[in-house]
Length: 222
Ligand code: SAH
Image 1 (cartoon, rainbow, N blue to C red):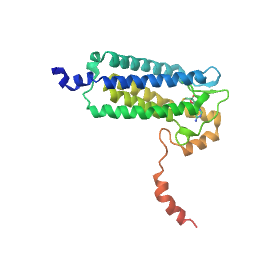
Image 2 (spheres, rainbow, N blue to C red):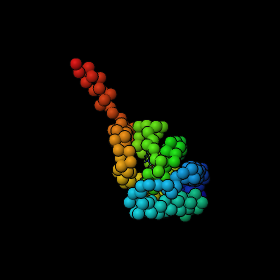
Image 3 (cartoon, rainbow, N blue to C red):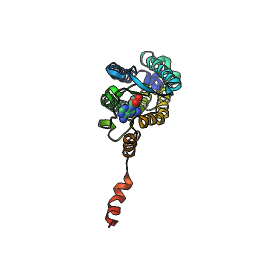
Image 4 (tube, rainbow, N blue to C red):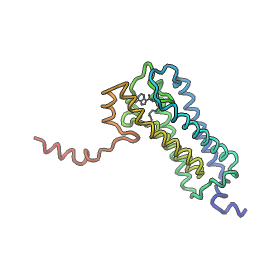
């Protein structure tokens, strides 16, 4: 009883958050496996990057660690007390909100990329440049969804091992973006360069200057 009063003890008994976290995991895996079957495998790829040799195995390793930590948290939370941070309950609810927000974006990006999607950085035989839907103003919305999921699972679980795994995944996503864009420029040339001009990497470009000064400058031109 005494234990229930402490921050960690209180959270251990919160079955709801554990159910929500496992639901998030299950939905992410369902989306991924569905789109993998629909052409996400890299068998008809024509161009691979060197990223695969180092970053992809590391990403896989971090994901395995995160998944084990997630399983232990969901099924044996009493074993994770050493990794539990004394966060307030509201931050767990913020995690629920972020996780819920990430799912439609995650699904939408997979749907928009369709057969162009793959885990590894590759271009395929009939690769097309997707610049609509979530790709209209953002170049890497799937990674944005992954950042949200990582943050969501950390806040939801208040478990720093899960947090570190999410941080590792996010860092690897950020680290691969340069190589990914170089690959896209190789494949699509000026079309991708122009696309880069009008889009943001992870969030839409907010060109506040254009809003504020645009009309003034326009007015000043003869
Ligand atoms: N970085 C993107 C996609 C991640 S999936 C995002 O976060 O939304 C990685 C694969 O998507 C890469 O192999 C790359 O070939 C492909 N890809 C990335 N951007 C693309 C685009 N705009 N159109 C088509 N394929 C793209």
